Image (cartoon, rainbow, N blue to C red; front, side):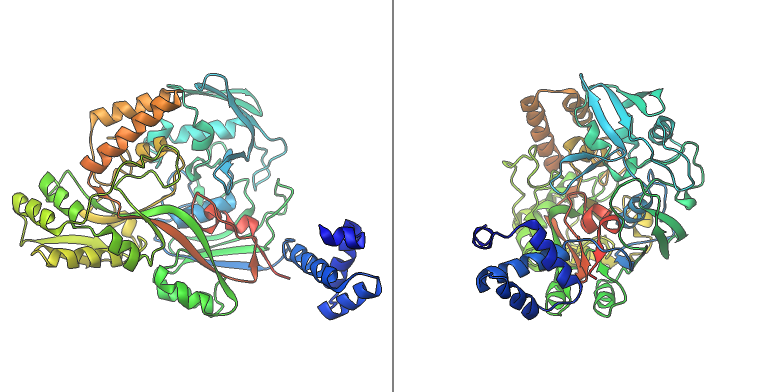
Length: 537
């Protein structure tokens, strides 16, 4: 603030300088103007720099945003209940809203809801914003919210969060803009749960989701599953700011090199989730920057426990000792991440069990277990695909480690297109890729409970299921943390999921695109990028 005291400068004077910059004044001309007004050279430089930054941070409307994700298939959907990957999340986030959301720090913020409150953690009152309309002009009411949430309970819908939604046992419309949600047991995490992508709000009675009729920042123009989607700005959007771009086009380029080249050649403005190998290529070219998130996703190796060879616990134990986590982090991920310990609670989460150590890389111990399982020397298929970030590189490292002790792992590389429908959850040994989820309850309910829709290793434990319900209903934070800590140990020891590392998300973008921030819900600003970014004028 020294320059302000020296020159008696105020915000109105700042506006004059900013206006001059917008009219095309050069830095030299501005400094001459300031010197003529009695401003010292050093103070003038600070003022011009500050004004330039202010202009750069001011959103500008216009432009057509093109972004390339890394996965797509003909199963792509605009039904938020069925969304299962970053492509679905990105499209759905452009046309729908949620009741709540997570900001860049992971804190809950309200979106369609003005408030979500409870006195006992069991009966929650949701108050909706006034004047919100769907793209077809229909007003948002409590009936839309109740319809959207109840859909997750209908087995015919096939919701990906059915296991989480089951705790919602009662819904009541108090009036057009107020509703009550009753839970089976108290759960203080409900506002966070409602921030998940799947709980986006659709219009009451919606049966055709190909129209994408939501309350979101963009109106759907065209949607071709597995090909692309095109959306135009919602001129009647209920928020006072954004979106800033006129239109948004999203498609997938599964090959990492092709996706990066599309960015460097100017065909797209965003190349999502690039491989760490491409990092230097992007950084070495002027006009492009990287947007990095914290270690908030992971690629895991899944050994199904309900079929061979994963039915044999000695085989599973051998694989856990065969994975060289340090090498994977160093070589496959170029150091972009943190060592994993075979449980899904991300680093930094207050419920994470930091005392749980990863299984050490020990080829001789792995060989002992493989011999005991009677599989040493057999050819064991391992399905890998670029659909799961860095899975190919990880598979090669594990395969090489196996070869040194006589364990033949047959890495079968399959196309990205259709991987999540044909192989994920189905192949006896395959890779998965899990995005950030903010609470242990959500992660365990989605991925490890006996009835979990994404139970990747088909892990079953009555004890685990009972502990999940007990922790969910406990408002004693110390007790809750103790339960979650024990559950993480159970997963690491008993489940068939191997999590070598937690991955740092890296999106590559043109430096003309402004407003890009990280978000714990995932890359591309938690897949809500299109609503918030703008092009430099």
